Length: 150
Image (cartoon, rainbow, N blue to C red; front, side):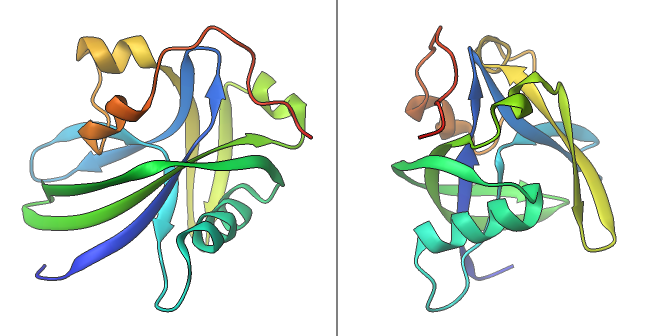
């Protein structure tokens, strides 16, 4: 791929865990994890894109959306070099009972997958990998309850 893509991701926290989806690289035969998100459409602001993606993926309301920053990521996936600009957001679930679910089933068109809670300590130790790797620089360990609905 020769284009730079613009992406949004949204971090949801449950104590010292974040909600991520599993991504499998068929060439490297490795698994990495990434927060939920997607591409920004032409003419769409990143905040609108993250709201759209969370509504489409989760089919539930989110609250307390706040920007954490932006990063640039160059990586290889399925044997192809990729380059992306990623806008990072954090939010909470309007339905507080969502935090009680260990996995959240997500349907995107004909494709179904699960998002799960993984501890920041697991990513920091290298036991599991997160992408983009620089995301950890934006996330401090917290020992609090998740963002409360307003």
